[in-house]
Image (cartoon, rainbow over all chains, first blue to last red; front, side, top):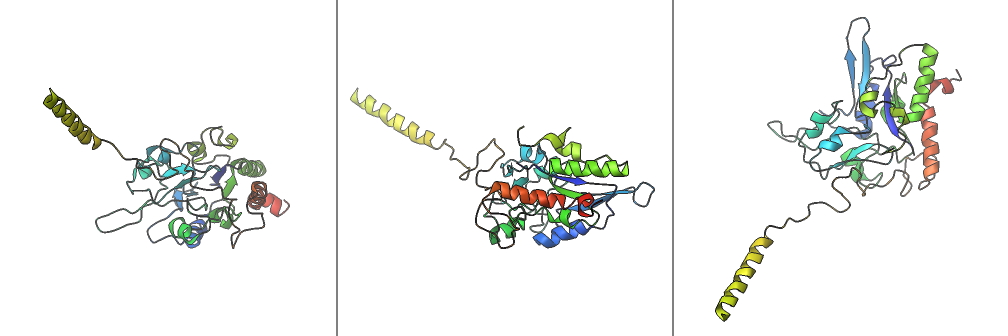
Length: 204
Length: 84
């Protein structure tokens, strides 16, 4: 069983924002909602680094723990999804998330929040796979189509990798060995804990 | 005696009816289980009818789906793609 994860290689990310654009285009994300965004540290300074950030689909997801209506869940592949029919837009998940992943479309005047929206690892939601209802609420279900998240597959420098955690770790290890630096994976420990690549199955 | 019995029975009935309002209807939709993080209503991604834009894997066959995803993951490894 695959255990889906993201890796962003800060040595490679060039802040082109193609992951952001691809995500918005693929899922027809409304204005004001960014499921993925690129964060640049020390912009313009020596040692500047950029990373692409979205929901990391944490192994022990704090958003799931705090959701008062229990609308969030893990799939067997380790993807954190949510049910928009249950979401009340309270914003607890936003406060709990270490990556700022949950997004809330404006639903009216005076900052009224709509239902939470976030990266689905291109895995849709509880609706029937590939159905118009699923697309309208969660975007395209590429995982059911046998594809990986569009942000990772579109990344021009392959800084962003998505897929089974163990295979990604092997790719990254080979890359680090070849270039001899940049072994740090930002967010990896926060999302998956120490030795995250070894967590093959939920609960193991 | 008989009157007091009837009065007691009536009081019991009223109390039973009043306490009936204290019940709580279940607020979970079908398939959802509080305290768990897996919603049963979601199906695995490889199950279901063939999709219009799916890649070359057999829908319904988990092994086939996993093989296809492994192929896609390795497509992100340029050390394999360019033979470096």
